[in-house]
Length: 113
Length: 116
Image (cartoon, rainbow over all chains, first blue to last red; front, side, top):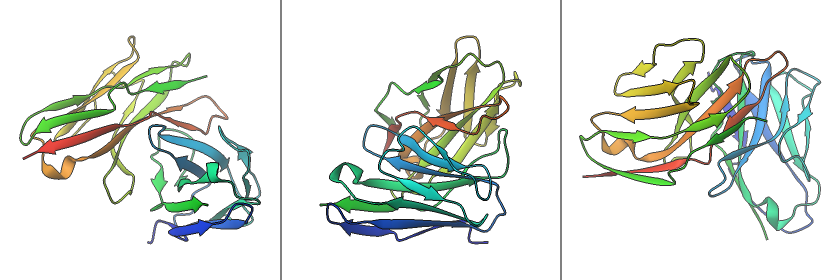
């Protein structure tokens, strides 16, 4: 099992450009999450999904969109990148509600110039 | 809304010694889950230990143990016999158990340095 994978691992964008980050998991997990990690601020939830075809806003959703067309994939889109979106992005998945651990991807370092 | 606070941005410990990382949280729920995650320089998030609030017994995993004080809303992580490989960022996380609650809330992290 590959677990949770993220594509790409690194990316540099110019202000105003768009891009999509792909998260894939092969554990048949229902729940998937996108976080951003900034120095001194821990992990903040951007969007999450509780199943195929569903998405919901997290703590910091502005400037991002998501889609969950297939159960195993969760896409995070930036329509018009801004320097404030420079961050490390993590995808995570979990089996079901309850105390199950989240499994994390390796992260994507995004720089917006 | 629930919050998680880690008041120690950075801690140091001598190799083979014991260190305790602090975490406090705020919630009105009676049942929930608490986690400690480790993030080494590789950036990969790794689950260290998990505690269910309804269990009074503190969780332990080898050299890692927690001191869970439900009334005080405190969840500290103790690392015994510290090793160089323990150097990392440590995040405390909370997850409620109310139906429809799917979010995990993370603290801001504590950077642990292990001195040889």
